[in-house]
Amino acid sequence: MKRDLDKLIEFVGRHFVFDEQIYPELRGANEEKRLAFAVRHSALHFSKTAGKVAAVSEDVDHGGELDIETVKENIPKAIISTLKLAEIVGMKGDEIVNAIEKKYKNHIDE
Image 1 (cartoon, rainbow, N blue to C red):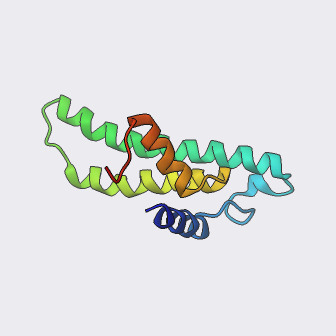
Image 2: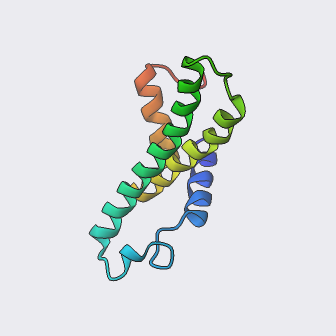
């Protein structure tokens, strides 16, 4: 599983690139500014995705139907944002798995 996460982190990193061509704000930016931009922009992606899921919930609160398809569309986006953030800060699959196991005081294989 840890190697699969590493592969996904690398895959997302290849397809979700922070460079000057896509983000003009990065022109001439040093590594520190690039890192700050990447973390901030990742937060925007998290917010955008969470907002779409929240909109589904809010519609239901007002008597609407639960739009499961919109929720399903946004699950991969949430995972992509998480994996990109891991790539940005240099976090590996084993660190993610270990942190989750630590949080739940249990091992995945148990």
